[in-house]
Amino acid sequence: MSVVEEAAAEVVADPEGDGTPPAPPLDLLVWDAPNIDMTLANVIGERPSPSSRPRFDAVGRWLVGTAGDHEVEGCVFTNINPSHVASVRPWVEAVRSFGFSVFARPKSRPEDDVDEAMLEHISRRAKEGPLARVVVASADGRNFREPLEDLARAGVECVVIAFSEVAGYAQESDLLTFIDLEEVPGAFTMPLPRIRLDNLPPEGAWLRPTRSLRALVEGAP
Image (cartoon, rainbow, N blue to C red; front, side):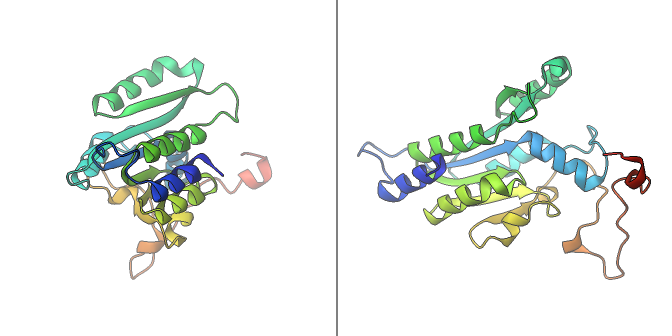
């Protein structure tokens, strides 16, 4: 049983804890920065620039605006390459200045990731309860679909925000709510250069390649 499955079981068995006055309901956002950055690059076909990356102040306003009278917590999880600390520090400080906590883990090996830390934090908040809503910003269905569906069955509203091109797991699930990140008001300063298959114009549209055709014979990644 995963840490989130255990927490979901506790939500069902004892939603108010040990009899002490319950804490206010919590709306929790956990943001998988490596995954969102990677999938954004896939969606637009190029490395994201500052103007094409999501605005955390807008995401924070959306979270608060949809939380009603619930408590809110926003957490950004990221990997830090030790050789890129100086260039990443301003971004980390900017995110913190908008009211988000940042969990940073060194990226020493390719397999170093933050998914388990995200799941552990969700589990911790679910055990402390009451967790009213959890919003996961990640297209990683392999790690998040089953734990989120377990929480949804326990009565927690579970929302996934990502890109429709790469988050099929959330769109296919009857238990999860999916929101395309570009639909969050103000999340991007300008429309992303993408054509969404779920929002095609009546006359049709061209989808440009995401890499050169010559890469097929030149061995490019």
